[in-house]
Length: 298
Ligand SMILES: C[S@@+](CC[C@H](N)C(=O)[O-])C[C@H]1O[C@@H](n2cnc3c(N)ncnc32)[C@H](O)[C@@H]1O
Image (cartoon, rainbow, N blue to C red; front, side, top):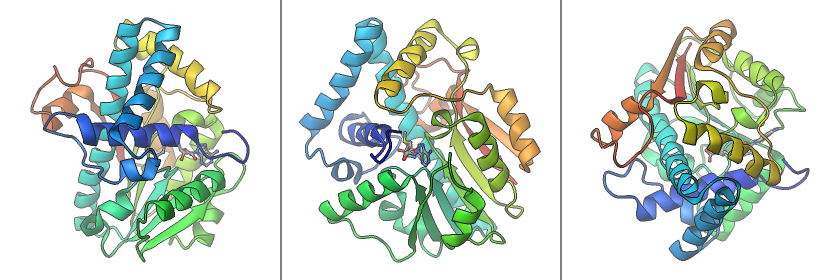
């Protein structure tokens, strides 16, 4: 991230959730009806123009057809990972989870939108100070109320100790906890990724984490995907947020087990299409075997 400035990729993913909510056909995967307000863009036209500019940036690097396909895939993937969180959190509540910790929260709206899902939990949004301050400003401008159970923890994954920051922010290490870590791993160094996972892995049995991850090109399912990830690398670098680490599913599985997680479950695209889109692979045009989201239980 550019020093002292909010994450631009956090705006991008919120724009994608807004775009999905405003334009995706039914069945929508996610209903983030606060995303548009949080982006501050104000209208579908502005959202569409933001997306079109991203497609143009990709097209300048590869060809337009791949760029459009890739951006559409990213739109769906960003919404699917949040849907997985909503479903897994609902299940985790039945086990007695007491805290929701949203690591690298960006403009995530779960705490403001899913009031039934988060009722009775202590919710913590952990993010880089610059992004978190910007989010608070966006919330105020959009007149979105901050629920009483929400706590903000300012934290830099690369330069601070997560354990200490969580404790100082009020997170109880002896409480069964649900962590989300969406769209963050790829922007961190291997060391920061391993440290973060090892901190999460110390929470009590029954705790859970949902994350998405970036794979090295050699394991990606198709050529369009491989080229697009190279392009993505250039584009997010230009946004001040270079991709810093990539993991194969098996490498990440091993790191998670070493960190203290006992069950690791990678959700492939086929599972997502079957469960969230009634098998409509024409809507989410992505190889069924590709994986980028995983859930891990302690
Ligand atoms: C692509 S955004 C994802 C935001 C959100 N989780 C979502 O799904 O929309 C990346 C997030 O990681 C955070 N981030 C990146 N590097 C960080 C760092 N070194 N310390 C703290 N947060 C960081 C950014 O502030 C931003 O909120």
